[in-house]
Image 1 (cartoon, rainbow, N blue to C red):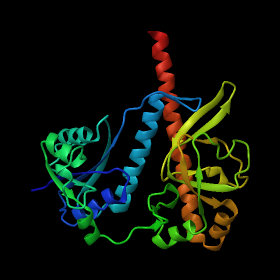
Image 2 (cartoon, rainbow, N blue to C red; image 1 turned 120 degrees about the vertical axis):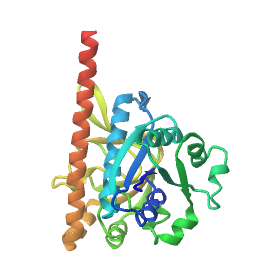
Image 3 (cartoon, helix red, strand yellow; image 1 turned 180 degrees about the vertical axis):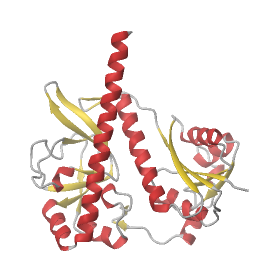
Length: 310
């Protein structure tokens, strides 16, 4: 009998490694439902920047949906139907359970960090909470099961790079070639890492922390988006002029991989396959961010019209 299998993802490779374990048992009539839970957006002021809750939430939703679709393109096999959804919830377990109940999933297959598979018994465990609240069978996979079924991940200095936006679709060897050009730097909260209008000398990949990317206007700096782990900036460093459009400011302490623009462009010239993949990803990122900006503008305009007509 066909089954609907839901797999919650959080952006980690461990959560994604559940997919191959499920994929091998699929039949043509089965459905695979990937879901990611994001928190509701809250308006906040950070470092003098006002960030609207709707802006934060729509940005998170768009990024999560792009991520889920990327996983489907990469992981989906010939068997089964694959689709995804993003759930907004203040509680990850409740969001997962809600998505499972609404989609009428037969099974929830998920990862737990606990090495002895005792996550379901630990206080505060997401797996335990999902089991408690979902009216669906929950299958839990731990590090031991994943280690037995998957190969080594791409890792450099303790950080995984396989989900960096710039590296999508690249092989392990290609990623290692690019990562090998860089060096790690730490940036304290409040420090700027590039100013709009300046020429970018380096591309930065966020390993941990968050940065505000803002544009100058007549009323001051306006936050365009919040960049987090796995994201690259400034993309303008890979354009011909290298002139930055936005100013980057650390909202939290940042751990970055810095790659000199000249080195990355030289590698792209020497190894065209890497260069084509990088610039293909950059083009897609520009398109995604442009789409997200238009969505945010539309939401803002709709809100103002409602307020005017109220």
